[in-house]
Image (cartoon, rainbow, N blue to C red):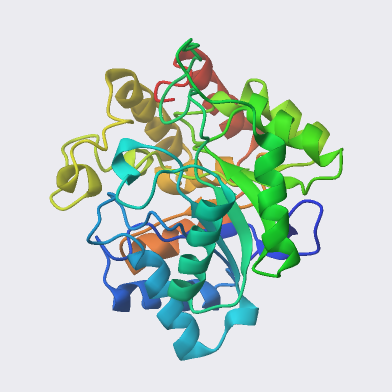
Length: 343
């Protein structure tokens, strides 16, 4: 395993982060524990979760993923061996069963306390805002369209100072954002320079079919020393190649047809081209796609997910693959021909 540190901290994390959003829906508690055990054996020490999980979000299973991690922590006593990241949900129709979704002090306090209880721990290493309060271009939107009726008012400083209180209490160690834009990261960075705590990471989708963060955001990350934690590095499984012929039974898209973000015509076109590159060089499409993400200079840790130990093994092993200059040039040619087909 390869390791790095979360920016501006001494928190050492594996280059592969174990994603967990299927635990409690597609995976049982036992399977979740098996995944954690296997990942730990391979040197992974970083686990990402959220109060929203498991997915798809629904009242009956909300918080189940944190509970599964919590029972593993209680059973093993290995809290000090892992770095845990979680998130507070933002405002959205699909999360109204949790709370309003404002980042007020009372809502942050409610979210943190409930996550701590489910995780059976006294602290969360990295606490993230799952998506912004304001209306902006996240969740598959490439461009920003301003809404004159958006009632949101700038509260970046206020939110940071709410979080600072919980940092001082020791309930969270560090903070980050998710599904955020360059504007949001920059505004938080500006407030940090005035004495507020710093958002040290951003968790956004990033993969061969969605490289939109390279436009604008990556410069901010480099200059402000903010780490990128990419999620969906396999594009909901599209970049494994398993959807190229048919939709396998009990796959995510089969079970949840609305998870079709990566299923458009250009995504298939690009995926077939990437698959041809992988076959030409004798490697799996899965590992090529993950190795590409692992090696980007702005990536801190790559959040991989799996529903089986076989998938998990292949995903973790990608950390050992280094793509040649020839492969990278061929990947870039496909990207230039079909850029960001699934933002």
